[in-house]
Structure formats: C-alpha cells, structure tokens
Image (cartoon, rainbow over all chains, first blue to last red; front, side, top):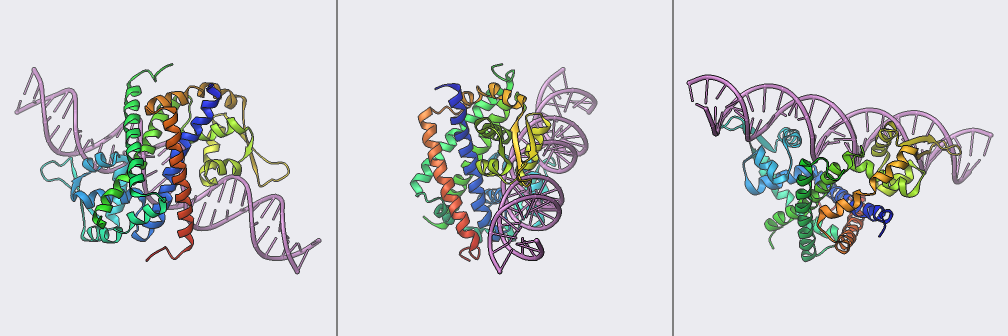
Length: 157
Length: 157
DNA sequence: CGCAATTCAATTGCGCACAATCTAATAGCG
DNA sequence: CGCTATTAGATTGTGCGCAATTGAATTGCG
C-alpha cells in the first residue's frame, strides 16, 4: 500500500474513534440532562458512588484527569450541592472530596442510565464487553507509545 | 444482573471509549507538533487534501462539526497560512475553503503520520479495520438513538 | 534541625465541542 | 414582485482537556 492510501485509511480510523466518542457523549448528554450532570461529571460521580470519599489526586488517577480539568469540574459539582471539598487534616496539600446527601441520593436516579445507554448502542452485553477490552488494550498501547516518544527528540526526524 | 452492578459495568464501557479517544488524541498531539497542527485541524486538513476546495458546510458534514467549531478552527488554519477562505461568488452565504501552496505542501510531511500511529496502536491493519467497523456501527446506532429521544418528552420519565 | 526537592491543588491560557442566537443572503410561495 | 421561510456562517457562552506555572505543604537529605 502506498503512502497516499495510508493517508486516506488513517483518516477513517482516527476519525471513527473521534466520531464514536462524540456520539457517545451526545447520547449521554440527553440522558444526563435530567440529572443536571455533564458526561465527565457523571464519570466523576460514578467513581465517587463506588468509592465514597477520596482525594482529588485519587480521583484524577481513576479518571486519568489532572487538576486543571478536575478542579473546576469539582467546583461545579460543589456549587450544585452534590459534593463537598475540604483540605485533609493530616496533609493540608490534599483535598478530600466526598458526596453530600444530595449527591448520594442522585445515585438512585442514575441507576436507569446504563440500561438506556446499552439499548442505544444496539449491542449485546457480550459484544460490549469485547469492544471494551479492545479499547482498553488500545489505550494501554497508545499511552505506552506516547510516553516512549515523549522523551525522545520528537522521534524520527 | 442487578441495577447496582450495571452502574459499575457502565462506568467501564463509557469510560473505556472516553479514555481511548483521549489516548489517541495524545499520540497525535505528539506527532503533529512538528506540523504545527492540532488533531482536529489535522482531520480538517485530511479532508481538504483529499477533496481540494469545498465549502464550510461540506467540510462540516464530513467532519460532523458545526460552524461554532469550524469557524474559529479555520480561522486559525488561515492565520497559519495553510488555507484561504472567501465568500462564494454565486452564493454569498457560502464560504469556500481552499488550500494555499503551503497547505498543500504540508501533505508531504504528513504522509509519515499514519504509519507511526498504526505502530503506536500495536494493532495490525486487519484488526484496525475491524475495530473501525465496530466503531462506525456504534456511531450510527448512537446517532439514531440520540435523534429518536431528542423529540420525545426526555424519554422514559 | 535547615534547606532543597517533591507533591498536591489551583490557576492561566489555548483550543475543541456544542447549544443558542444573530445577521445576511437566497429560495420559495402567493 | 414582495414577503416569509430557510440556509450559511459567525458569534457568544459554557464546559472539557491539557500544558505550564504558581503557591503552599510535606518529605528527605546532609
């Protein structure tokens, strides 16, 4: 295959993932409007519903997000009355995030979301699981490649 | 499976796609730095390299982006000297976007990107093609679901 | 102990995504 | 032809994602 054709194939691959991600986002946007959450906020709430109180750093590790993204996001969740943030007592660098009663209660209303999303995909449970595994492998490989090239002189130039 | 468990499974699915998309973005970011392009700008350039001159609307249909995203993006490409924008002569509502000589020349330097991306994924050509097909089916299904629920009273409430 | 290095959050700045609104131009209908 | 509806693009506002910087607290080493 010539370089020319790769350039076209490439567009299809990267574009497909980009488009799928945004399409997913769009469906969540509709379903989450009732809950007053954005999609990334929902992801953060899922982690908090599962693990209870945790630090911003721990949350960032789970979500693969840094403080530049999380700080304002958590501020908005706090403004919405869903979480509270307070400096840790024994290490004042750390900020503990925990659910308010409202935040914990919102979980009940979120329970129906996954089934509706699954229905929207038109995929079965098994197929979704398989896709998830492929995507996770992809992410792992891409992250490794990114950190490889990061240190080098911008790779093959 | 109880609702409780769905909430956890769900996190894994939507999160995996979200993470994969961002990981892809990260690898492109590194490779495209040399070209002075962001990932979405690269996508736009791919379309222009393939199709030559086209209107903002046509570009938006290809990329599934509206003018709110494209207008500033194209302005930046124009500021970088890669494209030119001018009102169409026979329909002054329409803006034609076409490559400058610099923009067309940049294609040569972009030719190596796809192979490097493919290498970073650790996937073979066939596997990539299959993943692309799954993602495209997913996008189609999600778009359909989104437009279905859009008109309804915010679906089952 | 005292000072440098590290760590955690927050902030700033830039760009993308999308909804909503606005303006200008065109199309279409009576 | 004249008026309304539609279309194309730009603009505004909000929120996410990430790089880079800053500031405060803690760790660790001599």
